[in-house]
Image (tube, rainbow, N blue to C red; front, top):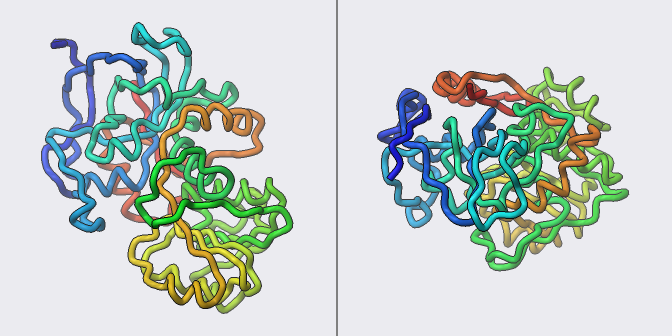
Length: 339
């Protein structure tokens, strides 16, 4: 049992941002198959605040059993501090990034809001050399979500969201509408769709227009001024980064044979309507993959994909970061920096 301690943001009960406490916690003991990362930055994602609040939005049968205290956080970037005896792909001093134990860590086993985190070597990759730790930490979940939805799933795990496997669609020459385009997933989806040769329609609030056009959006729709689904039609693919029960409104803009990919599919009840319209509705569960992060690193290094940071907070100010997340209208990602 280790007696070494670190600083971490823990919570001892479910609740709002006020339950996040910056305090001492044991440094986790290294296990076989793992590397230990001295964390430099942590990316904040929706599952963080879902878990903080007790996963109230999930059906009860999906709500994981949690042991307190727990430490939130899946997306990290930092420096390898130690390597288990059976790990050969990394060495002490390597700069790495990772999405940690997702979705297996839904109950708080990812533990990224801390000075040290242990990561399965199979879930880590060498950090892109030309970006800093903050931008590297902002990338993994959003980048892997976009890649696994739009390009290549990269695994054969059963899909908890639907009986059939999720299958990306060809993007070249297609018209793609991205709702919630300025957020963490959305702004990367815009870039990937454009890179793959699609015409991109970005839906967001008006203040994000220049930002999204700079990332490659061909058409911008300000949802605060008009109703997006009344403005466009004959769309091949809708990536709805907001999702939920209202995602069905985009069925009417899709052409027969088109597809709707809701990033948050819970609450959607229109699958039978979609089937009658000849439209595919599909979703998947993003999963950790060091191999995919390694393959995608060159796209981050050369600027093909740029990760935007809405705002940055010190680890001890995690409460403030979660308060910012609750305000919505994020442009890119929120990041915690770690001393």
